[in-house]
Image (cartoon, rainbow over all chains, first blue to last red; front, side):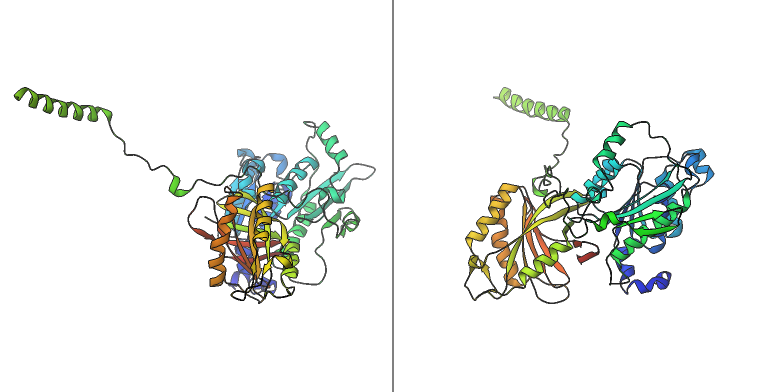
Length: 302
Length: 168
């Protein structure tokens, strides 16, 4: 194990190899995703694929780790900010910055061993879970909200969605009624309150869950699947919504809801048309005319 | 071509439990994975959707190898492949820890029967997987290719990501 990782050697003698051989996707590089990107770089994950079409704006500066005022002024892409931060922490990490929607980069998403979902809304969460389940990829969802009332309440969650196990809808985290409401509010969402410290708590917890999945440092006890954050009480606890469905098969994704129904094999290499050499027709015509003239001369001689 | 073979860890445990059962006369057991396919960036994904155990009566009593399955087992899997448009991967267990290796018999026999699945679904990849107690290896026959491809990565996904075979 290299000196760089000597202080995390308790993760296992092969942990460095396991981590450098891992590919992790981060969807959304705001308050949550930027924290996760930074930590994965320090830990030594080998390849990080970043998905976010957005540019930095002044309201992002309060929580996007690694961003500067200049980034907001220049409208730097969030994936560029994250890539810069990752490379500064660990230049050996291979970064794939994709400044477009994850839905437009499904082939990249499918290469991931684990995906972190750091996106708002129930419909986008379900869509991301759909795509991860189709490729047997565990998804770790991170989210927070600030609720108005007599006192503002900060709350959030980290949920691990593992193929074949209960999904977001099984636990009730994503409900049809919430998605229908969200659909009705399309275009009127506005900017929701977000602050850096709950993002940090939730993202660090998510990275801890990821580490326990790839390089477990203890073997007893179940991996928590649904952790609820109370940002006023400053606590994180297992949410009872998962306990109700734990051990049951998922009711929403069947065992055959996998892969790409429209997949087609690449053409065989030997069937690839061989490029033909370019022939200038002008020269061909001249050559044919010369041959004809030879023949004609021969004819005249007789 | 890079190929990544994925299953759930629950499936891996279920298959191990099935393959380690004793057979009345055969020295080992066999099974088949039914799989779906997807394209990742520079990598073909083979995704196990279910496992089919071969019934006792579909084994052939032949001492020249650990075991043989009969034509009914083959017909059943070809029918699955045709009806559900699925890739079929033959699986058996080498009962030890560490990376398994396909035996000469494995290689010779699989070269005989795996291409037969193309009679059902010529447009899909098919292949073989050899499991050990904690690792795995495999081969893939890709449509319209003469070469057999070694599977680059084999992963069992659960609350732990088990990398059963990896060249990386």
